[in-house]
Length: 70
Image (cartoon, rainbow, N blue to C red; front, side):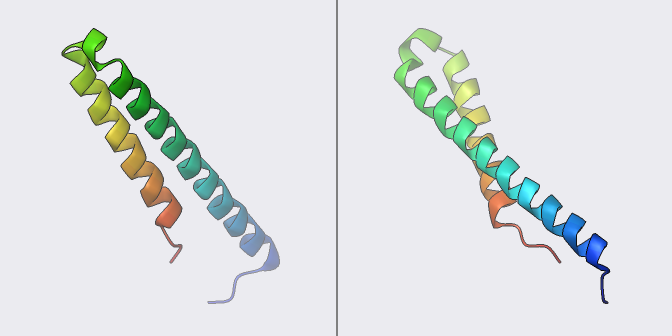
């Protein structure tokens, strides 16, 4: 299937935005995990919740970066 020039450009821009969004999610997840780890004593039970959220963000960010367009 041959795409028109406009369609290829929009497809490439969407791929670029997907990679940038994935990178942003990855960075936010890493920062959240680091801060949660530092303050685990103060957070008590909520620390586990925040750590799970940070792991989910890291995984989603990696998936968005690694994903290939088909």
